[in-house]
Amino acid sequence: MKCHFVDSRADFFSVLADKLGSEFVWESVSSGDHEQLIDCDVIVLGLPDSEQPEFATRQAVLQKVASNPAGVPVVAFLASHDRQMARTAMLTGAYDYWVETSPMEELRIILRRAAQFHELNRELQRLRVSGLELQDFVSLVGCDQKMRAMFCLASKVAATDATVLITGETGTGKEVLARAIHQASPRAKQPFVAVACSSLPETLIEAELFGHEKGAFTGATSSRRGRFEAAERGTIFLDEIGELSPALQVKLLRVLQERSFERLGSNQARTMEARVICATNRDLLTLVKTGQFRSDLFYRLNTIELALPPLRDRRDDVAMLAHSFLQTYKDKHKRPAQRICRAALSSLEEYEWPGNIRELQNVVERAVVICDGPEITVEHLPSQFASWQAAEAPNYSFEDEVKSFKRRLIQRVLCDNGNNKLQAARTLGIARSSLHRLIDDLEISVPERRVN
Image (tube, rainbow, N blue to C red):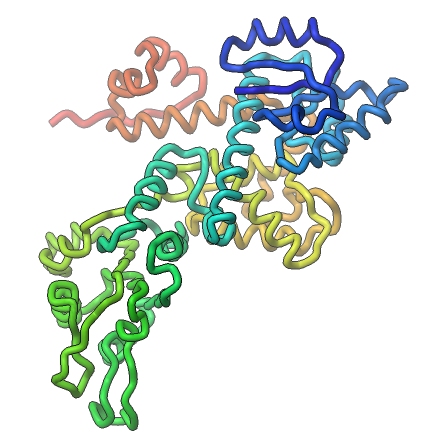
């Protein structure tokens, strides 16, 4: 990771480099050397105490550097734990700050997150340049490795005509992903037609999908194209495919196999040229086992499965998503909010998000609308976040946040390994005795394993 520091203390940064190790490469640059300044992953700038005579000058430099056109994040180095100084640094434009008397591990985490944030911004810009809308992709990228692997697979699938099945809980962005695949495909200039299978009555959905001829049923006073015809050579997206009735499952299977269909009231076969992308929040394999979903249709749809993880399983992405939504809605509603305070971010990261990304999007939009200042606080969040007000107290520490992260990580790994502590320790890459010590220190309750 390449870090440029705008500071005259070369000896200090030399010692810092030795302590942090080879992961970070440090180089001193001038705030006026624009090209060299932004040729890095993170910019570091020292900010003296407000009583110092050079404070105003350094604050002006911070503001200038933080507004660099490449969007390289700036981490402010503070000489002491001063809440007002930290607030000043963030309001001036710093991505984050580090107090020089704090642990090295805290600095390592801050620098890594800043670099990841910069890389994600660059990736989003590349997507925008390629003709795709930023807001369509913001929920599809992040630090989570599963998410990035899924997005990599989606980009490969987009160039083909393969049928895609997108799975995930409600609000995880299934339609957004479907639209992204369409936009990245050779069919991008053709129509994208979305059909919510669960919102149409069973008596109407067949006519909606395949169309009908005049007189096909009572009220059919004229012929009408269905969604498959409207999609032409583009993409048809069938959302909540698990809600289709058995009779419609048979007809959809025939369309996929023969690439043709008939309007209601007609015997004329029409060619189906659209690509099919389906989505569901249900476990189709379980529905197949219980006889509620046809196995032959399931295997026809499941050529490529893209599983979107719930937001609670990608907590490291919450801050990035929240900031992205903040930028969108402050411009849309012309509101003054510029950033989200640490306590509010912590509360967002700890929340379970049953409504996933859609819920986060709504929470941030609400906060932007009611916030009258530059910073969103816990007070601007809905009532379920009120318990996090205490996080704004001066006693809230980095150690508390690290403990919370460790507790979540260990609980998740234990759950994934069926509460087998030996397997969990191997997954984490630590000794079993170390895991036991962490369980005790963090007061984690581990259910007893059942032995068959």
